[in-house]
Image (tube, rainbow, N blue to C red; front, side, top):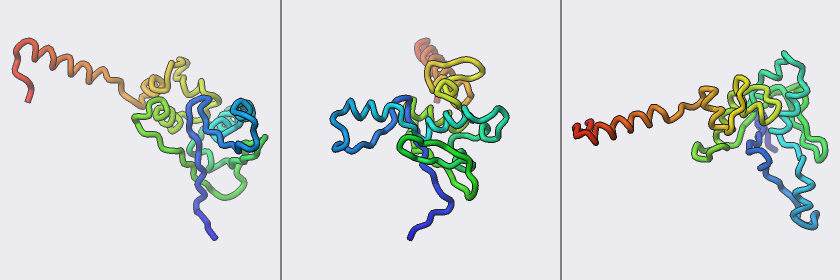
Amino acid sequence: MQEQLPNVVCLQVYLKNQQAVIFNPNRYGNVQDVVHTHADCKTTLTGWFEANKLEPEGSEILNLLYQDYPSKMVWHNEENNSRWTRRKEGFAVGRMYYAHPTSGEHFYLCLLLTSVPGAKDWKDLYSFEGIEYASFKLACIAHGLLEDNHEWSQCLEDARHMQCHGLPPLT
């Protein structure tokens, strides 16, 4: 009845330990049961990390960005064995869920996923040239994906000094 070409694979993007969990309330006794059951549940993102760990160094797969992964790999979403495997035929496009620039670390994570290939864990996304940064935003700045606010701060500081010393405002 419906065919979509190319196949579009929705790729989950979330901060560490903040993945969405869908559950049937009739199947679980309480919230703790849900948390315990889904604590190690693999998603397309954590599965990407795991699949990259299994690839030998120099593999073409390690050069793929997260959103390009479905072009060469297939996501098998099985209850206890979700995983990526090599694509044998066909083609697919990966689509990450949108993150607005005001969403903070979630946005910066998306930015890193579009430019850091072959990450094997969260630490790889926080790191650049052997330095581990405290946030995804700082890692983005180190990668050159963002500029820091130094230039704007300096401009405003200069304007403040001009105004304080009686100079006419810039027009």
